[in-house]
Length: 154
Image (cartoon, rainbow, N blue to C red; front, side, top):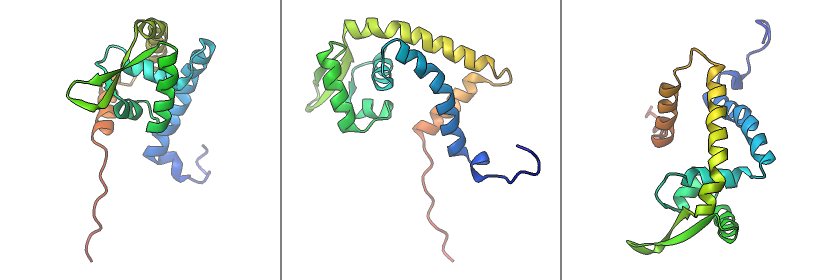
């Protein structure tokens, strides 16, 4: 951007910058997923369940950036494909938990390694970046989102 070019709001807006950076960096990795025959939503489910305790459909939908009805349809397909299974929650019969099957665990191994390699390549591009501090800050943003303030009384 030249010093005489108008300054666009989005060039300095945190939410836009986070979304654009995520879109740009993830596009590189998502192309490798497509070549491996995986869709991004299936990858997100597999990665979210890998090494984790069984998760609720709602929690999984949130982690995978999907609406719950979309997640339920995706899980139906993944159950039919033998990648995940539904388990009753021992504390609440109304709740279902999802876990990887051995087939799902095997399928996610190589994409997880590819994701780690991709992450390392991205981090190498930014030698000044303290990756662990940056990740901690992003996790904090996820866990503790900003809450709107009440308007000040006049």
